[in-house]
Length: 267
Length: 317
Image (cartoon, rainbow over all chains, first blue to last red):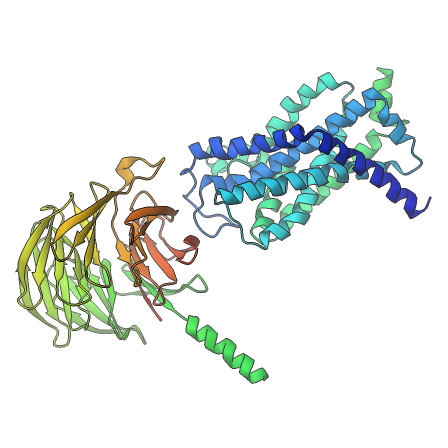
């Protein structure tokens, strides 16, 4: 196996994902409509609620729309990660997963290629969302739009790895509704996407702690700080470690001899 | 070559150097802020309940109304030492210097008076009876008019500075709080705290030519309590501090329409331009900070904690 084989495999996986993305333009638009609804409708109702205390990286009082924007980018990536895990379950049901897995390349590489393919779509969605937000006067310093790229890639692969991990547990497409209820919603609402940590502490210390240790929160904080040209070291390492952990479990999960598929097969 | 670069950097830094002074009503102190770095430099005790503040035209002296000391104190801007105390009458809150800087007009809210002080000789030269609870006070840049706004009488009193007599009165919306002239002295902008309006008066006719309701979408009407008002030298934009609405309104001074609202700290009270008018500073009384607004982009760039109850603000190059 030389590097060319690796590249060809990656090209094939990413090409397939991009082909799917081009073919399913509705999916791209739908993924954008969700955060835009939150931005234009939900956030509008809370316009004046934040303006009380200044917390980094913000240096002055901000409108709720400004606060919620990094959280909504996180939402795009969270849903994208789950969507790609949904597609894995679909691939497994349709049999194309087998073709992928018999490819004579390391499993981790195949899964990583699958992740990168998903992230490239979500990064594109995030930038389109930021462009729309810019017209809505949610403007970050110009360098922030550059710094956010590595943050988006890391948070994207972390959430994608979580999706892969989940997909290794899910036997059938129908079970995906459970993922929505037990993973996406708690992860999203118990995070810093919609409200800052200090605000949560006022109502519940437990909720505050749960939100603090939620890797989705740290991914959002990484995005938030980088959008304002700052580097949040804690959030970076937290997201990185979460990614390594999720990816390792996913790679084990996709091992036909030891993984979850084997166990499920028996069941 | 290296030296030339160093000198040019130093010169550009010096050109940018600026100091902002903020009176802290509850801390009995003056906060000194570097607005370029966005940092509080130091705080010095200056007297009981300091509120109104002004700089002499040559920037050498600071005048500060220490209300509970019943005086207007004069400080050197070099070493911040107290130089003199002016006989302001009781409970001075707001005051205005004339363009030459030799006369100071003080509102005495409890006595319904405007006291005129000769700054050079540190003497009271006149007391003018005005309406009930005088608050806002301003001198026109051409020195033709001194106006006093009576909060309870709901009136603007037009005082001729040559005779120190009221020449005319204009009835305005309830509780006029602050007033300011445009640089060409043709308009007077007055804020009404209860009606939530900005009134623009023509100086020639002394009549209101336009009333603007400062409604902010999504903000409760009882929070619209406009106070401080300033207009830039080009007369392109005017800015209004809207108290508990935590916003500064940007008004197009040509069309007299609201351009936008900028979110600042809580209970925004008074406003001041930087000497080059590239920035605007607001005192946010309840959140204990000042906000720095970039006027080229009309964006709030930073809020700096200064101390308890920031009230008045001025900027010196």
